[in-house]
Image (cartoon, rainbow, N blue to C red; front, side):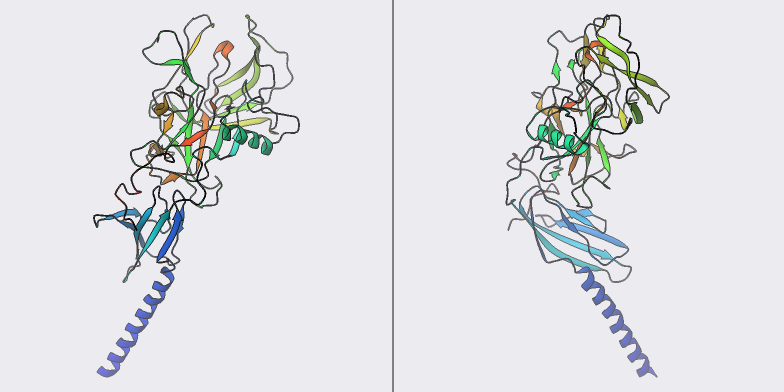
Length: 412
């Protein structure tokens, strides 16, 4: 009897071991070695599911740095070198562990530090719409997207129109979120006024655009199912900033234009709008820009935009409607300070927050979106509309930086 029991126990042990060996073989779909170009994503997804997952990086001093606790891990590094990684699977039994090396090499074709493509161009109505870039009869959303791309790639300006209008662009690589450093910059056409500062802060023409980023987690090269995160600038947590704001502009219908008394506005009821706060208003047309302000290539008769709304920054310092100053916010917005103030035109992916305003940690940004952040009309100057030119990855020209963990790499 005892012999029979021993044989059964031995068979059970062999069976359990065989089950684990099978699981190990599935999970070891991970290779022993990987090679990837810097600033390129490497998606690692073991086939075997468990109860817990752990990815760690072995640092030069022998300590392990936790990378992720998700089943799928996307490796991304700014610097070349060899990264020793260990994957640990918890299955409630013996578990499984796999160590492997990821060697990061220099790209075969040198990356451009500048904007490489425009994925979406959808401006709100505005006085420079249909001119920056220029609309021509027969243009479609696809052709206007291409024109916007041609402008940004060649460092020419495009307009985003009134509040909410946006452009989505990308580089030819992932912009890495390097700890303690600004990651990219975006050019605008803001400038400071030459007159004395009225309110002890810089002002002139600041048309702040809100910046959002997305990480391409499904690695398909498109901003489709990827979550967007706002980069929380200086105004994000202030009570006058509205989150979850929504506005709808309507294509102008045939009507009798109503000019203002001075004649600088040729139609004060040109484009009607309504928002989700019960407010309504009009985008006026001025004497300096006589073309259509509603995007002519868009078929819909209504355009709706959603996002964060910043408080108005324009002040009629003349008190007669003749001189407006648009004051710059401290930091965190594009077209908000002159391009010569390079640090104030630069952005840190570490500023990213989710829909609840909670900070999130992103490895990098594959897609960048800029939205006009203010809804205001400044007399003869017209609506406040963010304008942008090309963006730059600030790490392409950086000679040395930290690793993905903030610690030295292990060289080959």
